[in-house]
Length: 381
Image 1 (cartoon, rainbow, N blue to C red):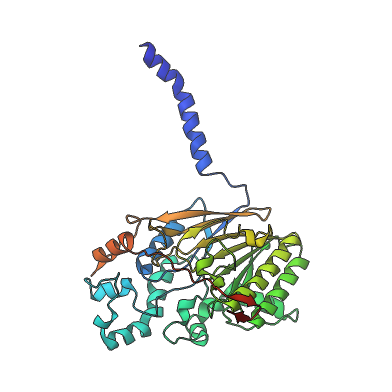
Image 2: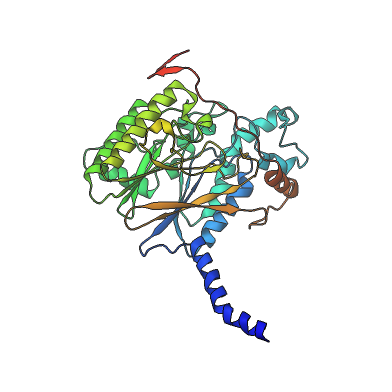
């Protein structure tokens, strides 16, 4: 009896502690906080994983995402995606990828329909949540060009916020190309989202860097802009994932460092600057906390977790739910999607596809960092 009374007396404290632990795990955001979702690299298993991400985003009523941002690599292109092949060849070995077993006609059909498959099976499930798309290096695979990419994804590259931003700036005599692979748009009056194209040779073009200078200069002069969020496919140089990022070439190192410096100088001007990347297939935070930056650190995340083969021993798919607070600060919380997360795959090949994606879709990442000395644009072995 005494023991029972003791337990009853302690119950309020136990409940209080449990509630405290829950509050610690899910902190309350201040009033006025709004949200967006972001990830990249949905090749290989994206037809299975992206609908799960879309379902999770739509179902999070407590943190409603204003949009979802895809950071590139929609389909494999250099070879067939497992999620597509499994529908007609359930026994196909996605690990070894015996492409010669498909035949040239099937490969041609795959290349002709891969982007349509991405739109139908990976983008459409997000409706009515808006989706913004960014180009990755695999969009230029199998001989595809940036112009072909622009034509196919023109509705997303000229969507309302992006188009309206260009119109507003043209009225102020700042012109940019409609439907370009790099763009920006302002949300909620104070956050400028900038997508940068480093898909080709892991580098930025001189024209794009000049455009970025203009955008950031305008942001610095605009007191309404509190926050700049830069998205791109490959991470800027000297990140925690430098083995698979812009460090792969001298051009990437030079142009990437130019962009890093532009963003950091904007941070010194009092703006809050954040960077989101993918390309390397895992989730990582504190992306630029490296000695090479000599204390000049940008806050960054890598979210290459939308379906591509994972570069970690433990397969982990999902997205970053990003909270943008009224003071312009933001934080990113990784949201996992699991094997049993809805919707489950159905139809021919669904079971072997699910098994492969959650059990075998991984491999070690090779180190592709440039090994020579680099003097801006010129490699010297």
